[in-house]
Amino acid sequence: MSFLLIHPPLVKPCEAPPGLAVLAGALGSRSIPFTILDANIEGILYLISLGSPVSDTWTKRALRHRAENLNAMRRGKLYANLDRYKRTIADLNRLLQVQGMKQGIHISFSDYQDGSRSPVRSDDLIEAYRHPEDNLFYPYFEERIPLLFDRFAPRTVGFSINFLSQALTAFAMIGYIRSRVPSVTIAAGGGLITSWMRNPCWSDPFSGIIDILVDGPGEGPLVELSGKEFTTGDQVPDYSALPLPSYLSPGFIMPFSASRGCYWQRCSFCPERAEGNPYAPLPPLETAQNLGKLTQFWDPALIHIVDNAMSPALLEAIVRNPPGAPWYGFARISELLAEPDFCVALKQSGCTMLKIGLESGSPRVLEEMDKGITLETASKALHILKKAGIATYCYLLFGTPFEKEEDAKMTLDFVVRHHESIGFLNLALFNLPAYGPDAAFLELNSFYEGDLGLYRPFRHPRGWERPAVRAFLEKRFKRHPAIAPIIRRDPPFFSSNHAPFFCMTGMT
Ligand code: SF4
Image 1 (tube, protein in one colour):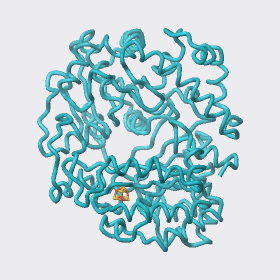
Image 2 (cartoon, rainbow, N blue to C red; image 1 turned 135 degrees about the horizontal axis):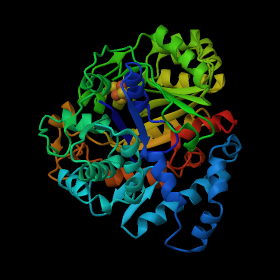
Image 3 (cartoon, rainbow, N blue to C red; image 1 turned 90 degrees about the vertical axis):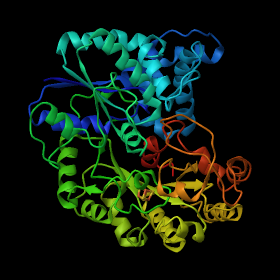
Image 4 (cartoon, rainbow, N blue to C red; image 1 turned 30 degrees about the vertical axis):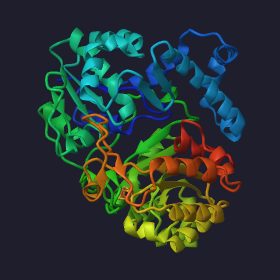
């Protein structure tokens, strides 16, 4: 049994896909033959390498500077000059954008949308499967996949599908492979597949297309498919089969996962909670030590800890066993992050940036969503992290069922009061998980997005509807003189994935 594992387009092409590195580790350690195709980075670079169907001044300039811009993205110097970085990204992105124009496809470094097909309608995905030639990446994978089959003759092809932006191309690739090698076994897993399968109304619309759908972690099912035994917790990620020099970052960003699920698991809007994903951490001390060993071996420019929330135990273990390279990840506001000595030690361990789900500046909203944080602690933590030299990437959520306009104004006031301590901001409009416990208490709208939709529109119980929230964000929040500079320094398309490099060059 040999495997071909595919990471389909499109996700931000700045780092190795963490899921495939874990699968590679699990298969490799049991001597199960496999090969990996990161079709995301390869496909994006392929599109950028093509001639342009349009010839306006911008596109001509983007074509002329294509090679030097790609090189610049992979060197640290660019990340010391935000304006140059933004120009470089915009020019490269233009080359993607123009390729999509003739087919009505909106493509960028962070998204793929087909004007005529939706990734949340199974009928549309089946059409994408039946007509792979409609996909923008078709010329790339039609050339690439036969080479891999000729060389490795895989019996099973596994797709790792984590985001909606990957779904249409994944199905097009599956359709192409099926038409060429009907006998091959097709497996698909990843975050998006898991979310679909956790829907209580799930009834597999893809039988005859995908042979094995994996709900949850994929390493166990893949190892067992090859007739070998799998034990949870003994897998170490392996990045060697991934095209590390190709990614658009100044050095290797090493993704690393220390847990699945979330140790808090209580925020009422959270898809992790709605899907009932169990919390499964690796032992913190051992994990921190393993991270150190991996860092020594792979010598990354940056470690990305991809956990939903790093537990306090993990943070403490990393402080005691610094990995030996700069790192960043998601952490919840806690008393620990409001301790000056601890934050200094965290910085010394290599912590460059923490992503923090602050969500709201209204104490009532925080309490009703069971966020488990207070604004007093958040305020202290933001100041202390800033003082310790750790940048914060703060996530705010507007339009939750608990929020009124006055609450959104409190969030604005909180951010204004703390603008000097906040490195970056992510502003999101609330989406109601379609099948979570919260949906039961709300009046749902009948708008039908598709049978695979992850969210449900609802009537806001306090009349704070999406258009009003959007207007508040655009006209008041983002334009506030203390907030506008924070919004402007967000790296376009790559956002938090590239933000730590700007922190390292002293921009925040
Ligand atoms: S901390 Fe984050 S991942 Fe955990 S429950 Fe809250 S929103 Fe979900």
